[in-house]
Image 1 (cartoon, rainbow, N blue to C red):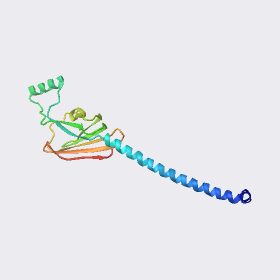
Image 2 (image 1 turned 180 degrees about the vertical axis):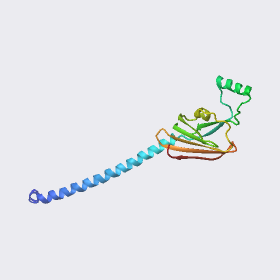
Image 3 (image 1 turned 180 degrees about the horizontal axis):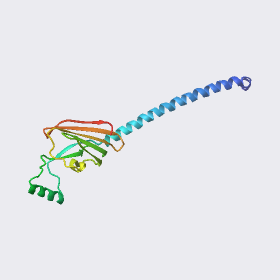
Image 4 (image 1 turned 60 degrees about the vertical axis):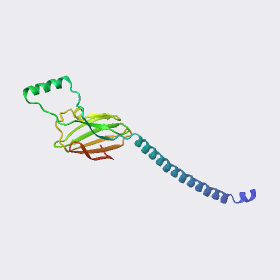
Length: 182
């Protein structure tokens, strides 16, 4: 046997080289398959984590008026005495997070006769923020038909757009949440 291998050393080396090439190709193919499966597992894990901590912003109507500060009450008394009191009709409008994760970098727009918008850096789970406070402008009376659009991102960096349309000041006619851009 040794004599056969010694006399055919070149052929043995060639067969061994071909076997090594075939094994290397098989190992490379297995590695690429492993990388693809690992990528799928990572995507599934991210999707699952996002589903557990997904923010969802919508509109909340609070029948309780926001507590005014002393300066605001004094100014309203002065306006009433001068006969120029502006009356806010209807409840306070608030952005509320009904999701299971915080909403970050929130840019909101209230589409009505004139667009009003603002920026809120963070809305926690279950937290509500008054649009009047968030915009730092007087909201005035809100017309009976309007739409709130919020652009925000989740804790994982995924971006969302939510839209809430309201008619007759009480009836939500549509609500939509989608992945989008800020």
